[in-house]
Image 1 (tube, protein in one colour):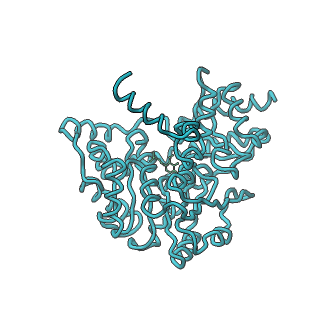
Image 2 (cartoon, helix red, strand yellow):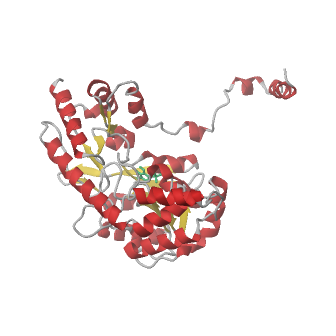
Image 3 (cartoon, rainbow, N blue to C red):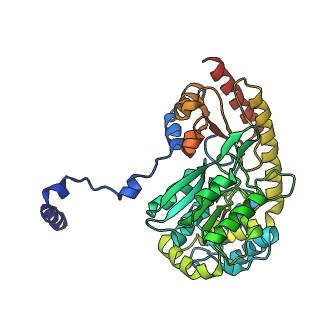
Length: 408
Ligand SMILES: Cc1ncc(COP(=O)(O)O)c(C=O)c1O
């Protein structure tokens, strides 16, 4: 036995009997996190050839060439070092210009670069919520927004969107009732994953006024803001359109969706300047900074990517309409076209047990969809289909679904 192993076993010997009986587990808050049901379905599909993977929230297209070239150039030029915690100055400036053009004047001092949207969400939550705090989230929702505050020991209450003839809607009065003065933070995602529900400007105005009154922080996940199909513009309504930059609003965003950069792990948040010193400390202790050459590619994406984003959104819009029409031709499928994001969240026979249905779909039909229950109990009865792909593949998927349902 090595010296250190001997020391460890001597230390273990010092534990009481009941301490020894416990396995070396993670904290209760971590053990209590929900595992991903999408992953569970994907695992059920392992080894099955030719599965159509519409379950993850990502396009089947590679990042545009001009952005990949920018990263290659940055690497060749030696951009391999740590950067400022809050991001390189050219990227913060470029993002401030971009956000400013979409949502009104924004200074670089209000922008921080993060390691993608999920890290921005974690940092935002770490900034304002801690153990014992009450957090409210609007569901169905991408699980990370609900689970992240729990990692910090916060308590999360949910307010469900309702589903009716007009698709998914927010009952604003119910949300306001849940946003009590004892609430620390609202986590809200619009356009929403998984439903595509998109908050109206009036709803945002009402919620913002209420949160102002009670001092509640709004963490607005706006990573799908450019994937918006409303007739009124090229970006979804944002809390940034209404709030000043110095109040309790943190807007989370990402390069993953509008520039197809999921694997690069680059995002940002817009927050009051008063938070930035503390945010810098949190970035230091989480990731220290986003990768240098990735940030440099981000500058090019923001500065030169507008035409690309617009054509991407036009393609997604067409794919959405294509898939809605195709699914509507299957009896028993109830589907509507939402205003934003890149998913259809729809009901069909068997979806009352959506996890089981999705496992059967992948095993028996080679069709990979995400179960609605992965997004909270309110999502049960639905499945999510990411339509960010070639319409011809969507058609193959629709025919697989049609045959699967007919065989039951
Ligand atoms: C609602 C929502 N927020 C944030 C993210 C984070 O994306 P990323 O970490 O790739 O920026 C996603 C990813 O799918 C999402 O759906």
